[in-house]
Image (cartoon, rainbow, N blue to C red; front, side):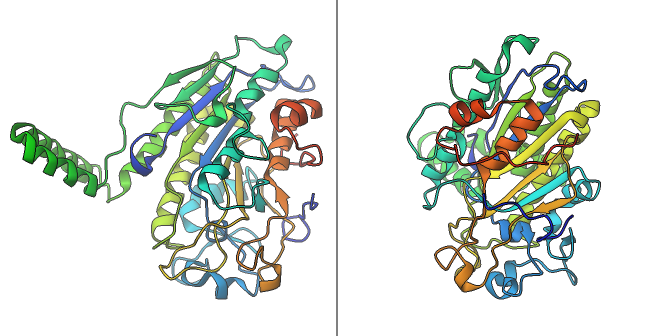
Length: 406
């Protein structure tokens, strides 16, 4: 049951855009006594608000092309999207994810959002990572609290979090201990920042300026040898972070829960659709999914990787060929433990009277339902823990069923 109606859900930093990468923890070797499992969970936080309509395009909706214009995906022609079913197509930047989808190891939840209905990145990310229904309520994150409620009798190691990067994000902060690790190669600064620094050094320290200029030239040469294009550093960083995390998570005595945070998804101008800035970022995300698949080896069988963002973007494009802050978006799931091959949504439609505030994709699925479903069926967390500890104030949000393969 793959189409948009038969799979309906009940309405129920490192420098610049390369992204900061964070987190993980030890899990019980077997979360479910009925099967010998060693579950892993990876949460990808996409900061800046992902355009879900240009990531998974509802080409079967008659209002889609008119609203999303040149950013809309198409089923055929140049730069065609990857067909998921007869209603939705996938951005061509996500080719590996598309393969996993058709292998039934990836799934899409569309028209999804947190409980937040404003458009502040700061507040939206706070709610996304804290797990509380309002911003500013706590200094801990829901994934750190997951570590706290794991059944202590089943843990094989002291519960630890692992933060990859300079600073742990809110999602992994809390009373559960967290240790830090960072990739050795950081993404480069923008050309504008480099020139500003060079001008400053030239004015105040010519000798240092000369060294800085030589280092810049070496970096440019290295990028050419590696075949990179402008902006490629952030994509390389995403993949390197995922590869490093996968090595740690795959180890027999390694961590079992991870959170990686990537910046740069705020596409107000020149967003592109099947090509351009967004497709470039999505290709980096695609590389992250693939890096975990290959890097985890046999552990991929018991892994769920979920990509989430603070809110979506407007259904109608703006005057700078981009999209503004919106509401509904997508969540992407991949992994050997995912019951995949499905786009799950209670599709609200894109007619003007169906849009949220006549501008946004209206959310019909609470993101907490998705996360609760994963945590319950993949990690074995109880309803009480999910409602009282992980996502306080979510009593009416029931865990989504059927996300995990059994």
